[in-house]
Image 1: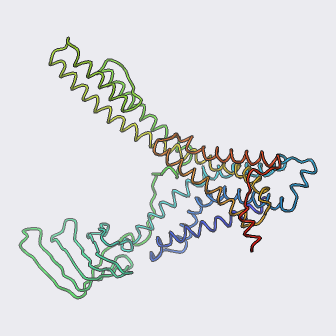
Image 2: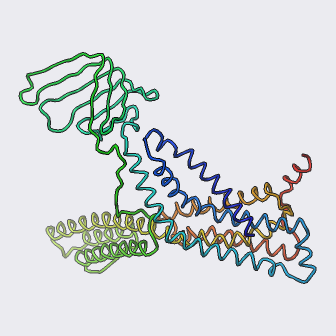
Image 3: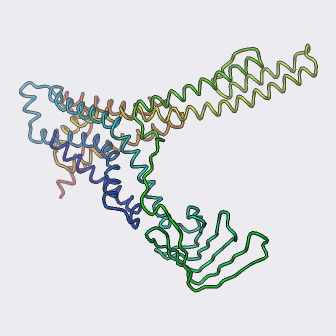
Length: 444
């Protein structure tokens, strides 16, 4: 399986990399970047591509290997020699476990750092030349001393250009031109405007006004960030953290949740005399409503006492809504990081499951060809990936726990794999696999 695995890994990584390159090429074209900077940007983004390619490569290599063994009757020969199918898949299973352990190490120590530096470099490249990111109808506010908006853009030629001065200056200036282009000097931007007007008014008494009509007007805008500035930031997103970082972040959210629950418990005790921690906002409001009905029906209380109690209950009701808003926000943040922690292990574990799934599928297909193996692996990997993305989305929205969201796709794969292995051991295929592909091959 080693050679098919590396062949599959190179092919899948190449395809994903080309797809990424076509989508990202506009980020650094025309920026005047050094070749090494572009290569660094592409290299850093290889990390997430490899993390995605490895499980699919395991499935593809398993299908190719067992398809070829089945096509050459090697599986039948081993069975005739008294070797069970469980024994046959023992070595591939060990290979899958090895790949999974390596991928866990990669996901925990290498991938977060490369994602982090890739994001920083991407932001630095984006900000290198603001003029290259001018979009019609969008204010460009990061030019020193000026704000600018354009009505249209055809390649490098801008139309309906409007420029406004900003900051503390002696006069306010507004410029309008029919067309304009933006180019770069060694340490500045050169804005060339054609067929326009300049309007100036002094800020002191607003009495001196000047209007200038021009055919060509050039503005030099100092820009210290012409050269690529590298940032050094310690703020990381969930996909840029190692497991210890994620655990620290999750513990921080748990402390915040504990503080909110303690505060809510104290408010209920001060208002109702009972330390209650409602499980939901609806339950909390219902408790307040019951207490309000109890107060209004209490004949021992005076009118002033009832009003005081009602004010306290209204305050408690507002606090319940506010506190559960915080709780929902903290739980969402906690789940977001917990999901990422489980993902670092659930995806590598899928490598083992893809071996268990690919072995019986390869035997049933009885084809070791690349086209058949690719079709099967793509279909099952697409199923797994859809389940994984769906589980992550549900977990991020607090609709399921992170454990359920990240491990249910693996449970589905395990169920399919055990079902197919059982029928392969019994030498009876439960489904007619690739019948349509075989018909197409025979017709061709």
